[in-house]
Amino acid sequence: MLSIGLGINVLFTLRANARQLEKSLAYRKEVRVQAISASISTLEVFQFPLCLVNVRDFLTFGHLVPFEACREQLRSLDSCEQAQQLQRQEGVVFISHQWVSFGRPDPVGVQYHAMVTAIQQLQQKGLQCNWLWVDYCCVPQQNRIQQQSAVNSISAYTRCCSMFLSVAPLCYHTDTGVLMDESSYGHRSWCRLERLCYVTCRPFTECKLWRYTDHLQEERPGDCDWDDLEVMTGVTACCENDHPGELCDKQRMMGLMLGIYWRLLSLRDDPLHGGEAKELLRLIHANEEKYFPSTIQLGDDEIQLFEGFLPVLRELFEDERYEEVKSQGLKNSCSLAPVKDQGATTSRALAWATSASTSAALFKHRTNSGLFSM
Image (cartoon, rainbow, N blue to C red; front, side):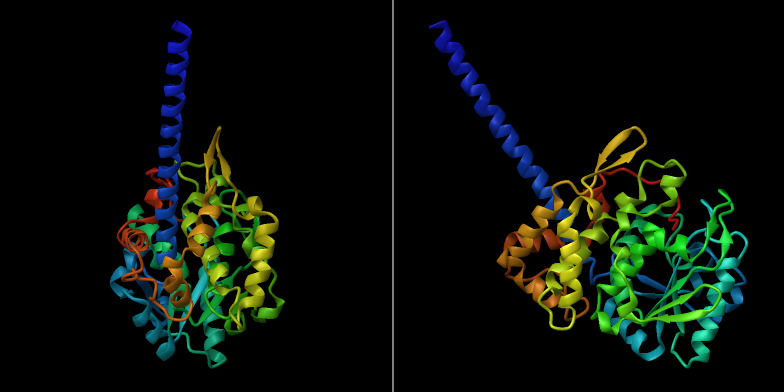
């Protein structure tokens, strides 16, 4: 009788543990669903307004000015519709560059003067470029919540820009003494991510890419390789500086990367963009761990990153309740708002996405004490 009782007790314990495990797995999946839904929403919707600096003002700054010091001169746009109208009428340039110190983007002014020269040369070519997006000027540097919201919106920002300008003059990192040039620019995670956002948010043939090193040159889309996809193997300032804050920049990039993956799935059957999307997906699926690593090393700790996310994302993509989101999201700007009558899960998840920061679900409520540095 005692052995029977023990056996029954073991059986009940195993069943209770199984139920607990099932609940735990369901909870983890729901967290991933919410995070992915937030990432989808920010493909086309600003979590933080698109702030732009007028070229005339920028040329008078004399150096890169932080957001807090120039916010009164910025133009703030709350929607993609507003931003795309400005883009068509006056031209908007997305400027991408690498930071050349851990605390400031451009201590000796080399980057700023290269940007000024590049913009002037674009104007001489008769190109419309009356408004600029530059990270240090247009992204909050002090308020971390606003900063992360702006980071989450980079993919939507790039969609509203006329052209993408990479600036990579020859200089030296003021803290490490390392040479900074076109090659080092290509290895920076943030720079790769910005370019990837830009080239995947429009038909590849419509990309307008310019690069300035010691002269201005146009990049033909056909000349581009796909190194930009290797965001997570790139270099970040926080990793170089031994993570002065608790959060790694690669954790901050998760929402954008998940959104880009969703966009590529949506584009693969597009007649204009399908070839490039299929090639990127082929690379990803051949080595998912390279492009979407399960974990990263943060000091002595191994931190979960994309573990379990891609299978859930693919499952959501095949869910018919997301069909309208998939069909609209890449044809019209600002079309990823909550979809009416598409099922409670989709509406609830997307509503959550537009009202909460992606980082809350992705980063386990950890905070970052470092600047937004490229």
